[in-house]
Amino acid sequence: MHSSPCSPKVNHMTDLLEHPRGAEAGKPGDRSAFSFETITRLSPSAQGLGRDGARYGRTGIIHTPHGDIRTPAFVPVGTQAAMKAVLPETMKELGAQCMLANAFHLFERPGEDVLDAAGGLGRFMHWDRPTFTDSGGFQVLSLGAGFKKTLAMDVTGMKSDDVIAKGKERLAFVDEDGVTFKSPLNGDKHRFSAEISMGIQHKIGADIMFAFDELTTLMNTRGYQEQSVERTFRWAKRCVAEHERLTAARLGKPYQALYGVVQGANYEDLRRHAAEQIASLDFDGVGIGGAIEKRIIGNTCAWICDAMPESRPRHVLGIASVDDIFACVENGGDTFDCVAPARCGRNGAIFTRFGRYNIKRAEHKLDFGPLEEGCDCYTCRNYSRAYVDHLLRAREINGFTLATIHNEHFFVKLLDDIRDSIDGGYFEEFRDESLAHFYGK
Ligand SMILES: [Zn+2]
Image (tube, rainbow, N blue to C red):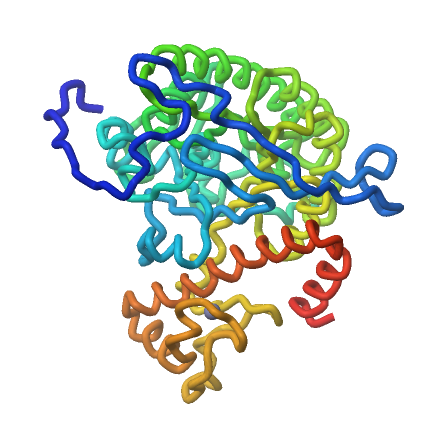
């Protein structure tokens, strides 16, 4: 990054929180500005996957310097400090409580120094609610292996430690200290490590950050997964130390919470071991990461919660579907990020209570009803399937905007409704009915 950027111009935006909680001139951020409070716990049940039938599902509040997050909550992903085609004002209006950006992408462009000079991610993107950044580990390692967006999950009988996507060159190399990789943006060689990721995330300034971890795929051998869990623990310790150093050194900033990430792929013993390791360190919360087979996603959350203090909020990284959300909430997940609603929406896939459909199917050409009957989002209140179908076919940006608004609203509201169902004591009924409707069972 540039060592001597031009002096930043002062901005005069007045409707952002000028004084985030726990920030005082000349002092390190006050850690007590971040905490988690439990409101309602799910009662244990015969089907509980935790120790002694425990179910770790709960509602609560994450208090952060930039405001509270009522949990369980959906965390929309604005990779480049932006939800594609949707302004932050609109994200607020559709009910988003917080947003997540990608440290790796912001490091590549515009560079973390720009966000630091702007006063942090929230100020930079005109978003006065809580923010998250991931550590960059996922991007560094998954882009490096050429899988780009997702890690292959169906890998029966294909164990190998050097699998890369067909026709791709390996771009990332892991060693004890960190990861060396080639930028997918311009081919430049970069280095990520625990300390570098912490430095970048502190400058980006999100309320919640993640420790730099090694992401493996389900294709890696058991031996490699074991080594990787131990390496991730060593990196986690370095992240905590560097985070403490930066918190003490960067005066006048709000406290940024740091979550440790539990890896261990689909091995119960490794997940439990990794969870105990992460629980032993002074993290503010926990990230449930890595490749997990769908059939054991609820179990994986429960194994981790068995080891984790209740006071630490739990974030499930990169959730993929409605049934996974229910399984993870029931077993202790508090927050969930997912790129699917926006990405699917831009391709014409619309989420509704009765499943997903493609708006570009011929039958919608003359359908002047809303994207989803009964939906109260901005799109459904004002626009028709026929119009959104037309815009998406014509590749008009407004089509991306309208489809994204509906899909993001769908997931934000789903988590809001789940939260109400736990507080109201009817989670099981709501879960069964929602899944029956969504999957047509
Ligand atoms: Zn809608």
